[in-house]
Length: 254
Image (cartoon, rainbow, N blue to C red; front, side):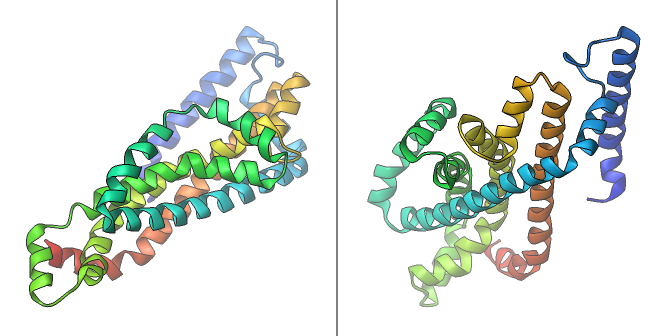
């Protein structure tokens, strides 16, 4: 993102932090209740080694769960696209699964699978799977019927139509779904760690809260937001690096 496009957001963030700092200084708010941004920054620096270790653990779980989620979502979208009866039967159930609150699932995952890697990865998959799947399904449906007919008249089978038309057209939708899911991946991981884990930002936040260290809780929150922004930045770079390859096919689809 060019610096000129990010400038308004940076100015607003700086103004918010300045107002927060001034309020804490003038009102003499206890740092146990609301630490000033300078206190949060100091806590972040002093505890950088411990926070880096917990952040690395969170990022590893989020990356693994997100990668598996995208793979499952793509495979499921292809199956639903080619098998209409499966789409009619399974898609409503997938929609209904999104109504189950994560606050109820996280403790159950820990109860069933313990404090290891599996329950956290499963929770990330459950949270990030659906936006990618829906985005892909919406993208497949955007291929103009005339373009499908043209390819069919040239002897293309269903698989070739899918590869030459549906996939390129669905690509922007796919990346939109990825961006939505990426914003949930880190949060879902932290929530899973909060419910039960040995390492990660979630367990760090829980420990800091129990020790009345609001500055360290907010420091972990800053790291969580930073990890999410890094993940979104990586997706943006991948989108730009691979975009030209599909532009011609999309233009042909009209």
